[in-house]
Image (tube, rainbow, N blue to C red; front, side, top):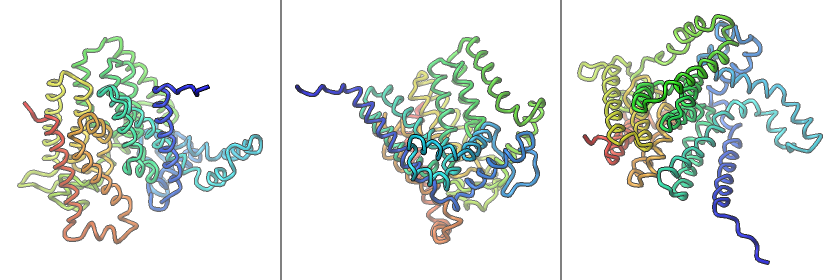
Length: 434
């Protein structure tokens, strides 16, 4: 008898599932690599372990820390604390192995050595898997082409940028973007009750998506949501806020939150007061990366003021473009890309990772509109060199020397690639058309 054929839909599902598992394996395999180079990961490990030693209500106020006091919102602190708790109970793995031989012995040996770092990286790694699925779904919806959707998801999943940030560096930018992007998609789909809590989750891990608040409010106005949905979203968000803040604040949730944002979270955003902290952007093109202050003038205009003006202009153009495109999903993706990468390019005090808010929307644009692929690939290459340089420059002296040679020529060239490719991609997408 002939073998029954596997339905095409099931084949597609199984193929993409296999792809996701390979992407997951690659990131997990890298979890124990470059620990000493990742000062951030050692800092997160210190916070995670000291959470249980100091207790949640002394966590943010305790004065003595080996590296630096915690300066991330409570939700991320709870995630890191959970990683430390799981690692402290690693002996259950051995007990489970003795009972059913799963997990295998080699994994237990690996986990005892690198398990804490793996658990600290795991939220970002799992978010990468979620973002690959999200890209697949959005591109499939916009093109009705499963092959394009498959390629777009694979492009993100095996992209050196996403692998490096989550699997090697251990950053959570993908987790922030997963909740932030799903919040915008839910808003576009008229699920405001879900969108508002999702945006809060993104903001309460790291406030990177705060730059999109004007865009979010603009879309909210255009959508004209039912008041009940807005009210329900706010109620859920308040519940999440109280649930995640109360362990640190006790009964004084709002006074604690005011202190936390004014004394710990917001000051760290501009503590360097540099035109570009480590971003290959507009300011690194004309000034010197990590040296010139954000008050340095361009023909008498301070860099920070010029940056705000250019960023405001990008927002206005994005609002006009979205309205002209009648609030299509693709126009929302283009708006997030333009504003997210515009912030990275023009605002001062930018770190190398702050391009990431625009990374997934860029991939969507590339695969929906093939004419944009070249510019997207150029940006992809430049931002990867940016994160690679920022991660290794303190431990690889030759790398820092090469990028700093001839007046930081390489930094300026990659900054030019970012600026020009961003502008040309948007021009090709008719973003600047009146």
